[in-house]
Amino acid sequence: MRILVTGGAGFIGSHIVDAFVAAGHEVAVVDSFWSQGGGRRANLNPKATLHELDIRDAKLIDVFTGFRPHIVSHHAAQHSVSISTKDPFYDADVNVRGLLNVLTAADKTSVKKVIFASSAATYGAPQYLPIDEVHPQVPQSPYGITKMVAEHYLRYFCTAGTMRFTALRYGNVYGPRQDPNGEAGVIAIFSEQILKGSPIRIDWDGEQQKDYVYVGDVAAANVQALERADAEAINIGTAVGTSVNELHRLIARAVGRDVDVVAAAKRPGDVYRCIFAVEKADRELGWKPKTDLVAGIATTTNYFRSASTAPSA
Ligand SMILES: NC(=O)c1ccc[n+]([C@@H]2O[C@H](COP(=O)([O-])OP(=O)(O)OC[C@H]3O[C@@H](n4cnc5c(N)ncnc54)[C@H](O)[C@@H]3O)[C@@H](O)[C@H]2O)c1
Image 1 (spheres, rainbow, N blue to C red):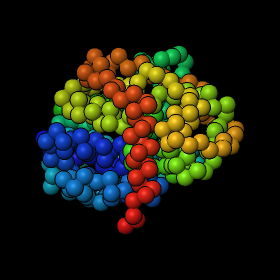
Image 2 (cartoon, rainbow, N blue to C red):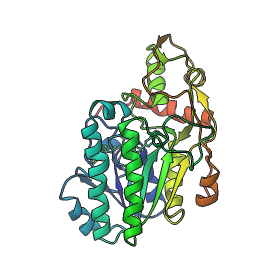
Image 3 (tube, helix red, strand yellow):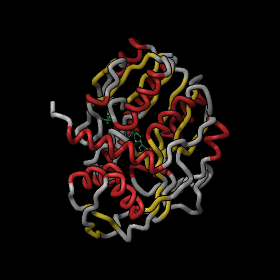
């Protein structure tokens, strides 16, 4: 199949591109290399064709008419909760207007299916645990709102036309290529800091737990979604909560050294526990997380170790 991956030079998108290419698909990427995103040319699979373009650009339709994708995997986004609170206009411009540009182009060119990167942020503060897909969506940030709105637009476009969709609601994704300079991505941040011997910052009491899912498993869920789970929103996580203090211990053990900890206050909007129920992913997609946290952290710290010793280009 011909698959267009928006955000395909980014952390998650590039692993999805690799998985689609490995499965024998023809892949094109749209990415603007947004200065505050994790997009890197080095992430790009050499077998994929790059269109360096903003998803909001009127020329996007030319990419669709030229490549004629069967599937669109929409991963380009303004991905930061804190940027969304500081600049909700920008967040909505990329995550809503950009999405509409993608969906109208997909609709005009008879794309069969859109797979969308949604988020745990659409649920807001958990009302019960583990969070399943019928948990109320009460997002607590502009980012969570735009991701939730995007799910509604997908439903609208797919009910009105012949296009199908799957929304994958990711937990905290981690793994090689994650941007260690962002505000989120605690595993990438700790890995880089501990490898450098720099102190790490732990907010709140460090006992807050999130559901950390390995990026290779997320890419596998996207491959499964090519043919399955139409019109569904599905949690992609592990059903296991891990605290920040535990991550610190596991990463220090994987690196073979430890560093000082600087204590900091709770980040606004942070939730104490967020753990996904993942039975629906098994039922609808035939997907289960395969990579346990110790193995995933080993791969991630090895990646950051070699990235830090690689000669700069
Ligand atoms: N990382 C996570 O834990 C997580 C969790 C839930 C959902 N998501 C979603 O998954 C997707 C990928 O996230 P990521 O962590 O890989 O981030 P990332 O920044 O590494 O990747 C996003 C990519 O989109 C590109 N991009 C941004 N704005 C664009 C625009 N206007 N036009 C074209 N390209 C643009 C960036 O250059 C980047 O390559 C996003 O939609 C994000 O909201 C991520």
